[in-house]
Image: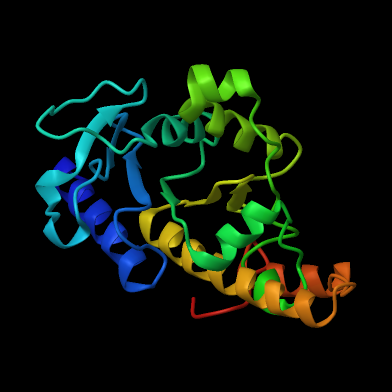
Length: 230
């Protein structure tokens, strides 16, 4: 992928989060990476979505060095960088303040796999990070946000559960590529909404069985997947 194509794809992802109802005002950001070149593109800070063009997307390396300083990168850049460095299989990161996923993050409640919609995309509960310490907030807030996400996946595959709720903040999602990350962000909000309503109706509702979780997840993912066309 050329760098121009990368910037165009990242713009498309950012606009998709608005179109899909995941972002209001200038909240949220999406980025994508070209691993071969070691370059990522990310939304600029504070630019209204309806004014953005591919040229607004900011290019930088994995150390955060900006290649083109016409625009400042998203204020969440350091979080994205931590995730790209830790999760080598991902190709895109999206952060939103989508309503129901953010409610769950603020309540510090993981999103449990209560149904097959969840199981089709997330292999288990979507975790909540620990809260940041006062020192982390005061000295390295944005990078520390990435660190607590990585901690939450210490014994999990981030490609099997490509989403997290940052305590008191909101969701971050990722994917192998930009389109997959957009889809994951959209589905995350749907399953958060379903979980919120299900737990409102029945606070003690239990997750689906491991067998049903396995059946639905593996039909769409992995070597034995059967969903879709060859």
